[in-house]
Amino acid sequence: MIKPFRIDIPQVDLDDLTDRLTRTRWPNEVTDAGWDYGFPLTRLKELAEHWRTRYDWRAHEAELNRLPHFTTEIDGQNIHFVHVRSANPDALALILTHGWPGSFLEFLDVIEPLSRDFHLVIPSIPGYGFSGPTHERGWDAVRIAHAWAELMRRLGYERYGAQGGDFGAGISLALGAVAPEQVVGVHVNYLPTRPDPDADVQLSATDEARLDKVRQLMANRPPYQALQALTPQTIGYALTDSPVGQLVWIAERFAQWTDPATPVSDDRMLTNISLYWLTATAASSARLHHDVPRGRPLPCPVPVGVAVFAHDITQSVRPLAERLYDIRHWSEFDRGGHFAAMEVPDLLAGDVRDFFLARRPDDSLVAAG
Image 1 (cartoon, rainbow, N blue to C red):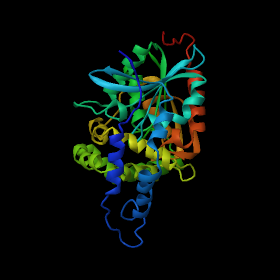
Image 2: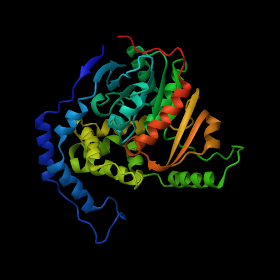
Image 3: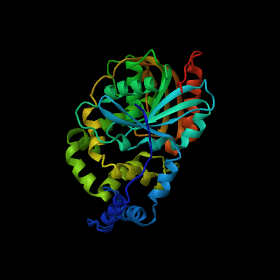
Image 4: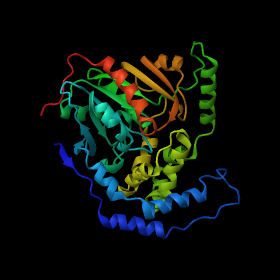
């Protein structure tokens, strides 16, 4: 059963957030620390004070409630999603999947341009936001992909495309693997390509530089990733109990993964962080790092489109990507970072449109009723 959903955070939870922010215990910081020891204290105090005194959750909640929200239960798990129909009844459907530390909010600025040509389904990953915490093991990319296939079936879409970045890219590719008869194509804006000494391919100087960056990341695993992959429950205690802890855990990613020329506004970032805090999903969202299997991904037989943004964590190497996927579309952009839908929504929406309009089947079916 699919049920309409409305966001309505209890006032007591907002008051509790304000109280906790007021009583924050701050650590000291050495003189002229900058970023040498982690997120700078002055900037974090500025963000925390903005969250406590100027940020208005109710205003953003009202804006979000203008969208059509729904929930349904799939495989024993609550699933929240936004479903926006195009004015064109024959439009192809797209399912857009966020990553960590994002949420369905990542896609707010691409809804209007994309819904001119596509029906949009924008779910929250199990364990994230209004999909609520998960309660059992095994919610990896493949299981989520099966849930997405069931969600699209319930909505009546027999043929559709999938798009995502970060974990959303892996889930979208997995969806193409588990439902190839339904998925007309997969577009991703994050596609890590690891060095492959057995690959008999010619690489340009740019490709080699990109692989050097990947090698550095592999040799120096980011601390957040190690903690969430190895002990998500342990870090979850701190993030669920301290709003400033949750704030800095995500704000650091936005600071390091965005293009300085296309920053995400403090209010948009705080809305995203508030979603994690108010739904107490820090630990359950972190579990995805633990549960996602390592190694070679599932074969994805459907056409794949890739958008590469200059300031993302890494940039894909096309000759290596083509050994794994049926690449039909490849775009390189000189601006934008990891949160492309929030940073450069015009570029991402245009690239998604170009890829899927070329994939649109003549017999695409839309949801009934």
